[in-house]
Amino acid sequence: MDLSRRGLFAAGAGLALAGCTAQPVPATRPEREFDPQDWVSVRDQFALDPDLIHLAAYVFAGQPAPVRRAIDEHRRGLDVDTAGYLHDNEHLENEARTAAADYLGAPVTEVALTDSTTMGIGLLYAGVRLRPDQDVVTTTHDFNATRVALRLLAERTGAPVREIALYDDPRTADTTEIVARLRAAIGPRTRVVAVTWVHSGTGVRLPIRAIADLLTELNAGRAEADQALLCVDGVHGFGAVDAGVEDLGCDFLTTGTHKWLYGPRGTGLLWGRRWAALDPLIPTFSGDLHPGAQFTPGGYHTFEHRWALREAFAFHRDIGRDRVAARIREQATQLKEGLADIPTVRLVTPDDPELSAGIVCCEVDGLDAFTATRMLREEHRIVASVTPYEQQYLRFGPGIVTMPDQIEQTVKAVATLRP
Image (tube, rainbow, N blue to C red):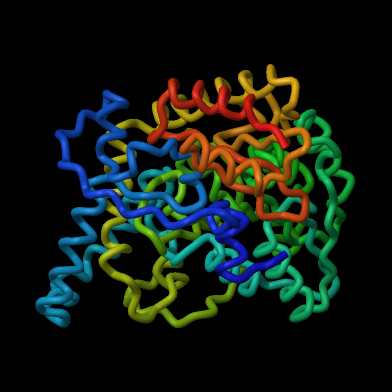
């Protein structure tokens, strides 16, 4: 798999394709008063091209007006008086961490700020203490960043990494089977269980709470240093599913905030409840002694983006985490039901909303996923993507920037696709 920026963009966004040409950037529309109870008003907070149906925001999302305003304000301040503005606004980093903690339902001391999900993955698996006589269990469904990080962990420690499949057919994935397969794979020497909350290649959402309960059972009687840690890449559940860390029950969660949360680009977080199992890797610039600060890498960041996280969480909170999740669930269900009725389409993602989230994957007879994505954009002004894995599917992601009538249009457009 091509992990270069160009390769990931081509696979993930499905825009760098033969026949696609850059479109002029539309003029910014006037901002309208925000009513968080009105989905049209929510959509109007974004500067997205209104002539496109945006079903790939989970790749790299645009920001709503409050976030854009905050970024612009901080950028101007840093440009005018860099040292002074930086000094006067250092407190905003902790406010961003506090906003993330409030969203997660966790103490602020447990949240580290990162630049991306991948940075969190690197900090987590390069920092975890692992003996050669212990092992790691992960899955064949995880993104390559996790698989590479675990390979490096194995090379560093000598501990083996074992990959298992949690399901054979994503369409019929089942909680009982997923938990049973993990139970069979986790041994007395397993120290790390590395999984992804929502699989970006299939749209399957893992039952993280059930997996956490399994580990609680298996950890009973084990010494602290021998207990299995549940480590979760949460990027496609975070902002799309109404759940906090207590609901999930995992030990670590890494995520970016520039996808389903529609937060500033280049921002993310790593949450943990068992920080003593990790060693910090990058010196922090924070004088605070709590783990969240100590595991936040130092250096000079894109502060105008990091500080605007506060507004991103506020925007999401004003709408309501439960309402956002319900909106995504309703449109994903509408999309799956429509695609399932098309004879030329094979749906990949489970119907069960408890085993799926916002990502919906499918195949169209006779068309590879890149061609289907290009046709949807060129002929129907629909922005979809391609799963960035060896098995490539056509992928959609309804969200708070899409409307039910646009989902209906998308179903009709997919029905017209032919080789």
